[in-house]
Image 1 (cartoon, one colour):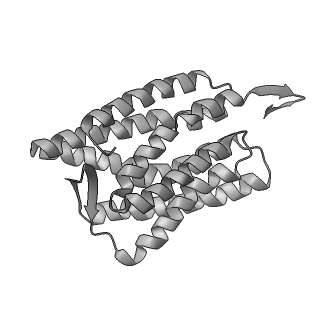
Image 2 (cartoon, rainbow, N blue to C red; image 1 turned 180 degrees about the vertical axis):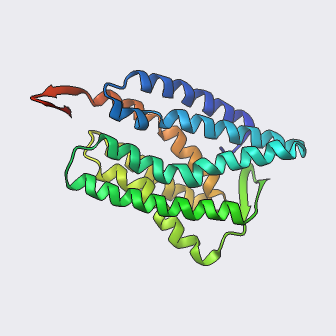
Image 3 (cartoon, one colour; image 1 turned 135 degrees about the vertical axis):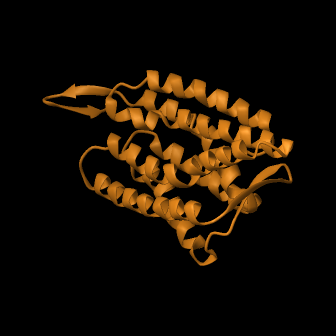
Length: 222
């Protein structure tokens, strides 16, 4: 998260509570992966809180590296796969599910690219203007295509999904992405993850709106 270690830890604690409450509202196993997103954001934000502390202390190099790569593991590798996969699990068979599988494939591609970048290039976090900037030397020519694939895999599934109220989550994430891109471009990774983490509280509302009821031999969302 941006701003401070205290804000990161406070956000992490809030998301952990929301995540536990959301998982308790799950009414079918297919919802569990999606319902776990706030908890995973809690872990990610906690890691950036640790990073804040180590950067300000100018020490604890190994802990700083660990916190950096835990945060980036979520930001660059887990979310492009996690979002479409969790939505697919909640979707009924049909055209929407086919599109979501395509977006999952897109997520796998961009996650694999970023994983290769993290293994091959240096990432140096630093505090600048009350934000954490993750400086790196990833290939410039692939930066825009990778970002397009990233946003496609993390935002479009929320609009394609037929799950009730999912579009609200999608709209909030899209708006946060636009705002971050305009005002916090140099800190996009940190700030957008913060916005998305806080917005993930909406998942509690979405899960409570989705109830599984018997329908002949099958089950469906209502």
